[in-house]
Image (cartoon, rainbow, N blue to C red; front, side):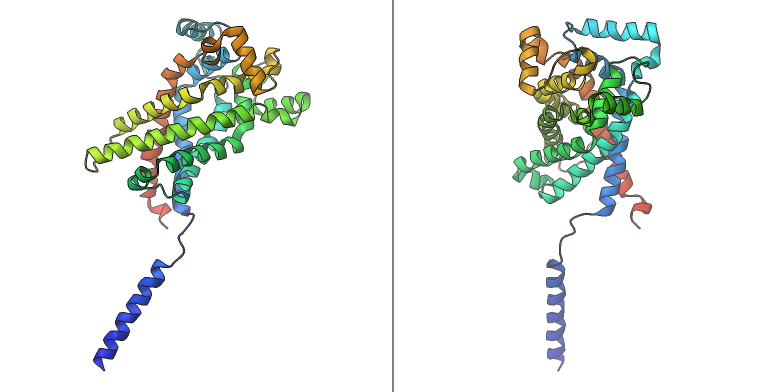
Length: 320
């Protein structure tokens, strides 16, 4: 009798284990999604506000055929400071925040979900499937760009115009819609998408790879915030360098009606830039400035996200 009871108990235990193993995997963890959204928004806001003056300077050179150098970039910043005040260097930052907060929020949350879907969440999985790790980053960029592109166009237009033309973010949308049509809000979307596939895929892949290598060489020691910043800076430099020409193309297409130039397609824009300004001086104009602001921004962004996300996942209100 006791033998039968033991057998039944053992069988029952095996059934419980089998049911647990066969339980459908949770596709979306709400707690992780919420923490990723909040951490991503925080990361984007902090990073972009920090480098806003450099961002505005870069855009102003990108959309024109004016000769670029670090000296002239510095002169642009000094001139704006002297003529219109310190806060003018942050002109368009409200539009940047309106874009970057949802963009970074969606991008980081999407990346966490794509890592889960593609099974590259752990260091071991990323090492086994580096291609999938790159794809996860690229898809995160595609999702966030598609959702927030009109805000990026509005930010670019505010950055290159005076306050008299566009007094607010809403005014950019209203005037653009009335004078150029709603399709203009997605002008330059294709080169942006092509660029973000390379940029987002490369930067996320490099950052996650550097963290994995650190883990292997330090026997699992936690990554220090300074190390996270350095890893993010390296990832940002490589990611932005890989997609920079397409960044030039999208800026020209986004602001064509404001500069009086015709940039209708990716090919025609590239041909015009190369023929009038040269290959390096045209398609890589402002890259040296990007090597200053880009690593700072991406380093701050990745570091802020990791620290904020780790903190939020330990908070009691998300565990309820």
